[in-house]
Length: 278
Image (tube, rainbow, N blue to C red; front, side, top):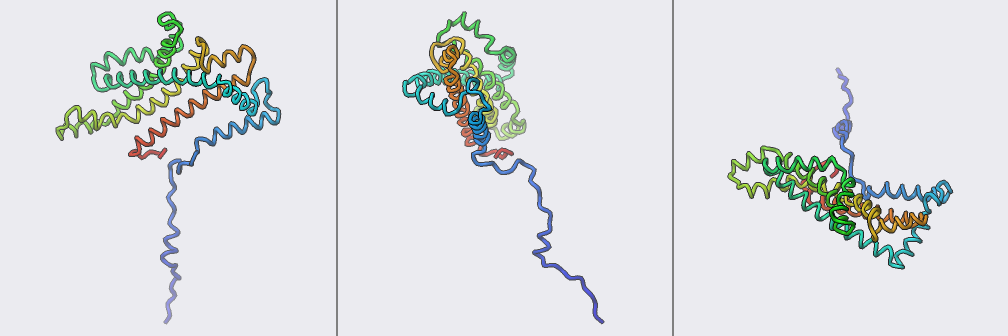
């Protein structure tokens, strides 16, 4: 008597029918993905200018802007303005980062320090830095110190806020473990607190870079006799749209370059973290 048996598939084929697990994250990073949006924006500018959709009196053609930039570089006007603006932004950024970091450490590592520092900084946070410019002019005049202090005031608040938050969000179990192991306070701050606060500090740096450029634009447009903002102001008085666009492009390049530098440092310094962005 013969018995009928159901045909069986090979083991390898049976394993292939297992449902694949869908990845929930955003996927693998795209190489040079941050440039895609910028290239698309430039392409839209070129196409709009070439087809006549953009009026040259409203927004100068990109090829005219390039030619104007070359002329400004040849006569040294753009180079001198860029150096002046760069020094102002660097001095204000450096001072603001230093003050914000020190205040965050004092406030984040001490309850007494937090009681004395955090309240006034929250008050400063609610007052726009640009609203302080008239008062700073009365105190410091319209020279370089006023411009640098204005930029520093715009910078130190985001550095303080994010660094302080990074210090206070470190898990308490690390402190308990350090106490169990007999770690000194200095070693605990050096090996646990500061590395744990680094993500917040670098995030604050990204905001600080943007804030420094915003403050730089304002102080150079309002009260300056040199710099990119002064060049834009003079061009506005004479209706030179091409020079205005050149200045705006320079500001944009400064911001993008500075932000990219901070992101590179962040990626190197925080290579131990596994996040959706990595």
